[in-house]
Length: 501
Image (cartoon, rainbow, N blue to C red):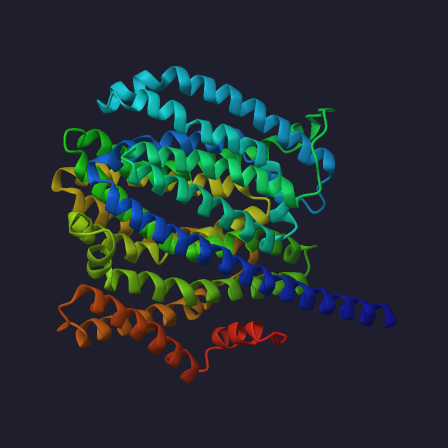
């Protein structure tokens, strides 16, 4: 009896510690994502005003190559490290040297392939541009192990500082170059400088240092898990860039179409990553710890942690994304100017789907925390195949139809992820709906009412300000009136009180 009581006390204590660290991690995750997106907005507005739509197209066309190269350099081993209970210095060291060797080889291949990339898109400038931009992922390879170390140890405060410094410095470089007429080269320099400062900043905060004693045995031990992650990362990259890539080919002679889509996609991604970025920083380490040994108590704790993250995601994602869809027109006109007006309908559609994208991050981390990277991989492969079929069936009907079909599929496909979550930890669809749908309905109705009330305002700047203020204030009031616990938890943490279950 005494032993059982002690065990229960230890479990309760661990749960309390986990809850506090999760709250702290989410706080710094939100701060990091918020600072990142605010800076991206400011930099994006300045660059959007100085660089024409057609001049953004080359960057959008080769984005997929840089992203896939970045996937290949880490090969999923950094995720494998985070998924370990207690990774050793040797694990970090093996991943460090593996990443560098892989990156050097991939960069050499892409360097040689640059002329063919330029030929494919019928853009001669891509030869030199791609060779320079691809340097960014090679530089990044030096910081992958340190980033895994910071993520595993939930050093969210330090991650926030490093990311902010990198964004500010690279943004200043890009704005100065764009002001002096460097066009798309300013965007290329932004990527390279950002990668360099991230590497330096991570080494500044992380005490671990690589050694010249190279042992790749940890790579061999986690090979299958990491390869599943790698395939999934590549599929996700294809998923995130496939439309820009295809439009880059289909509309090569009208690059402004590609530029408009790239701009809409960029703003949508920046907005939903405010939420998904916060979740990404804490979800996997927290869910790995909550998993523990299989028992009824631990299973219940895991479901409780996952559902709380679901509510947090819905609490932020739906008002943020539905709100951006509401103000899309005045936001684009007031920030980057009338020359980008053609991207407004695309942004509105993407924002509806963007409200559901952070849930993918949460489900992905749940499944990976269970050691089932294979499920994660096959779900993503199936999704990209369906997307390709939809694009093939709809592209003749225009870009609006393609984006609408793409958005609808991304929303519906979440049901498949939920089915596997039910199998793995027992979380029910009904509980997920109770945790998320109320936030979606409240946000949707609120934005519709605000749109109707403010429809008579003709000045874009005033309309943007009024709608944003009304959305934030009214949403907060509604949450308080309905006594939504997520709202109370946020306030309690901000004022330094302990969060109650």
